[in-house]
Image 1 (tube, helix red, strand yellow):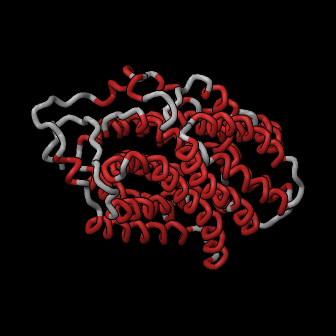
Image 2: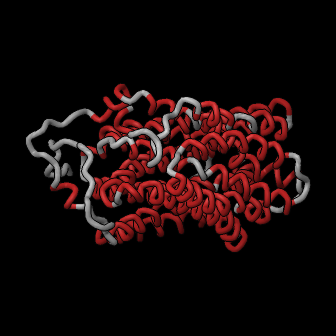
Image 3: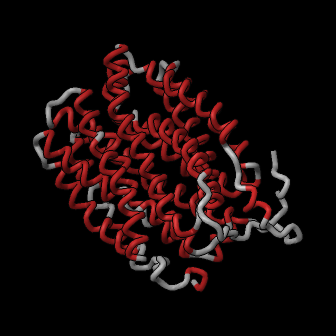
Amino acid sequence: MKTEDNNLPDKQVHLDEAQKPYAWIVMGNLWAIDIANVLVFMSIGVLIPIWREEIGLTPMQAGVMGSVGFLGFGMMALPASIWLTKYNPKVVTLITTLGMAIAALMHSFSYTVEMLILSRFSFIVLASGRLAMQIIFIQQWFQPRLYSIANGLDFSIRSVGQALALIIVPTIVVLSGSWRPVYIWIAIYMGMCSLLWVFLGKQNSEVQSRRDPNAPQENPGKVLFRKKVLWIIASSQIGVACTFASFITFYPSYSMEHLNISVSKAGLLMSAFPLGGMLGSIFGGVVSQKIGRRKPIIWISGIILPLLYITLLNLSDMYSSMVALLFIGAVAMSFPPILFTIPLDMKLSPREVAVAGGLNRTLFPLGATMGPFIVGSIQESSGSLFLGLMLVSPLPITLALASLFIPETGPKGPQANRM
């Protein structure tokens, strides 16, 4: 399974010629897999009310369900970026995608809360391994001038998956009279994506051939000690993650009670968040490249998000809530592509970039794991979902605070390799 150049160094290599069109085919296939990944991840919010009735899910267990997905990312993201990147990224992607299809199918055969939690955790662990490969393909196939754009599209496609999850999942439930077919269809879709990847998935051979065969291989994890700023970048999202995970887990239930709407309408309402996210992901990357700066989008998002979340909880009709969620999605997804672009600006090696991404996906779930657990605990003890969600709403301010210490690596900022 290891590549032939397994002992070759991971120094940064950039091609000087025009952008290769095949990059869009490779990434298109990976983005198709991303959609299925998000379908499973985002389905939880609209299904929690059904699971309460069918298998007796308690508020505390609902919080655990929301947390365990992020916990899987947190546990596996960094180890995967260090160890799995030693192997052929095409093969690792294929194996993990097939595993995700099996884990998705396991959901449909779960008749207890414990089985649901195990299925979700297994799916997320495999998804974490696959995502460690995705950032390598971005660096292999895209020119540096397109890094922020590619990362913006990367997150925008995930927003598409979120929107589809919040629209398709309730629709399948209503049409079939059960939530179980949702995961059967996702498993079939992922099986088809795996088959396409066998034929379409490729590494950029020109990048591979530029490596020096005589240089020793370094442990990419050492970059976390050499570039300590990576810890600030990754930890900036902890508060954002806590609030985000709490709202995607519990706001559908809150909206059904507070706005007196059905499950399908709650799914439609929540779809405004990823629709805004699609715009924000592209907007963030494009504007950052246009102005030549990374930091403004980061600190502005950290100031605006707390205000938007608090406003959302105090709205009393579906349409104004939908507008608020649209803005929240746009702001919340405008900065992640920037945070993932900064390590590329710093001209780290492919495996070091994967490690930086792994650290992001480790510390983000740290906050995301705490959020649903905290809100679920408050709801169970006080009976108030509003109180729990209100307490986590100001936490995205961590993004603005961390931006004070993050260096400017954009085209008009200091040279990244001097940091």
